[in-house]
Image 1 (cartoon, rainbow over the protein chains, first blue to last red):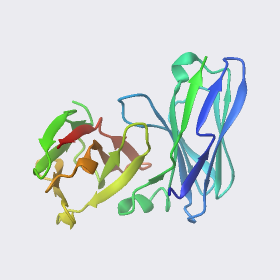
Image 2: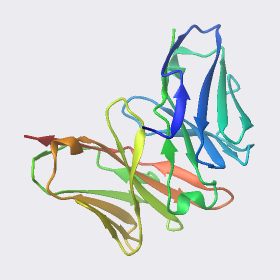
Image 3: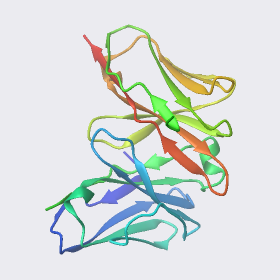
Image 4: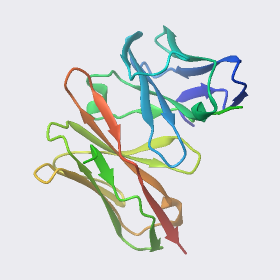
Length: 117
Length: 111
């Protein structure tokens, strides 16, 4: 079982809808990430939260809005998405964004498969 | 040249075979290296970190060659369950930790 839990597992939304993806981890990790993965492509980093503060935004369109309510939770709010935003959205965590990656890597959630119609 | 490059495969190998993948990286200042495994329509899962001295975990051996800027993954005695896409991950420092995934190498182990 993954230690990073993402909900929902599948989501179909219209271009005018507002929805949220949720991610939760209880490993005490202080860095959390959102990745987007299209079919047959590697994951692409979207956002990094370090100690509950947004530290990296990889030029993601404003229709994606991240939120980190506390150290265990990470949300991704979606609004006015386009069909090309359909993808697997992966949440990940690591001990922290500076040293945690040195030997521990990331733990990924199982993802939310998003379809925009 | 891409920052991280992998042969996409597929590598089709019989059960019991030994197979090796390489992953080249362009930034000589890269700090940390990992191999991840991703099954079809699933999330990536950490397979192993890659250390300068090389490391082994059961049938899997990972090596780092800093001079030639590549990492490798060797799988011995391949099992059907090893069929997956293997992603290399390279982490650079410099302001913030930049994480780059390779495009993955697909392995298909055949009975």
